[in-house]
Length: 432
Image 1 (cartoon, rainbow, N blue to C red):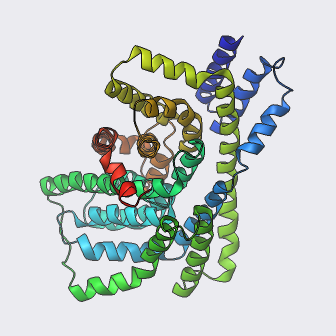
Image 2 (spheres, rainbow, N blue to C red):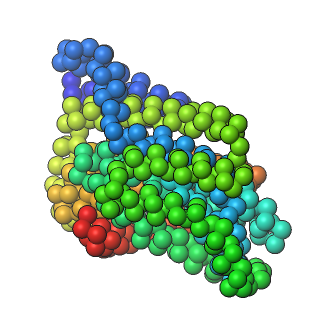
Image 3 (cartoon, rainbow, N blue to C red):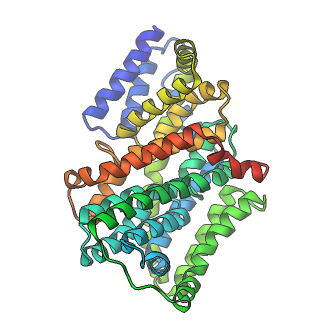
């Protein structure tokens, strides 16, 4: 019966995805069908409701709605423009300078807001037109924006790293994950810049005017309080002054006060922002609910143990196992959103990698970067669709120029997977 239950679970789940049923509903329905085959072993279908409820009964998860709200406020509050102007003063004089501005601004805004979608939307909507005016194809602008926005999922504060901390069962702390994400996120940003430099030189894209020290200082001063949010949030968590959840509340208050002080938002504007963030939070939380129910079912059926035993016995080389897990996660990322993927597959693969000596914090960065590549690729690719929509080009037009950027991301993924110090240097330095 257990084998039949597992087959029903996977077949129904993938069938529903192919039928374009939303991921959260696919997970919930597949879990329910599988549980029906085990009804004699369980109290009843109320088990699903119980697991969904207990799955989000976590103080740490309160950080997610607040960080979502903070990101929405930043998107509307004029922070994006200030970051773009500061980035432009730093790098616009280089060959292909506006593309660098796009990358650097996406890294800064993504890090501050904790959302790749917010970064792609806010930065892409401004930079695409500016880049087109200087001769850059809109498809290239979209490709740069899509891939650069993923850095915000590695550079803290990051909602998906909080989700991974929950899925890891406490073996990886939020503070350690936040610190661990800095170097991989920066490495990814610089790798994308390197490819952009190659394109800019070979295509002869224009240089911008070199900013004077006074201009750089002026733009830095205007962006200073936006950048200070990173120091306050991450510094406070690492120093133990407050938890990630408390930091998220501080981020909301800080972003609200800053947006009002800048004059880009009025009190009446908060109604729309609150409604938008509430809708996003509802979607995310429902995904977490159903994913936690499926994750519990995996444990009930002993799936993590079976996969762990199979990998350890069939592949006796740890590098081959790490590579196999990366390939599986890359495939998963193409059709599943990040949140359910982290919640469902962390309990499956974490015991395998820890048995081979990989630190849970290191694996957290690896799984997130894997799934970052997934959200840039079809068929699900939420970031791909948002970035294309903002740039006003079709997804099919973006795919070809996007491929080299995805290759760059894969190279960075391999470096981070097999060179642990890239992720672990800072956590060890801070004793986390």
